[in-house]
Image (cartoon, helix red, strand yellow):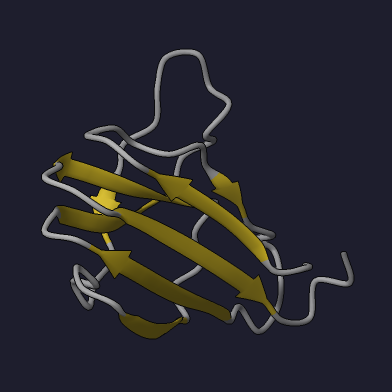
Length: 102
């Protein structure tokens, strides 16, 4: 998968970044960049993010809520950024998955 980013400038959730959860060695690098004073969380889902009934979203196991990087080895179908409180600035989530051939 090519590096994929999504950004937010207000109290919303971003569009999802879909992942290839069927990879035999699931590895996704996540990078969170943030400016300003905001409350953000990187979330993942094991559900189909395109399901009209809705997917269940959970915070990533490490609790990546500030600028930093994380290696995610838990197979999941998508990630997104949730900014639950916005004061100023912005936040960007970038995901890079190895071995997907995309």
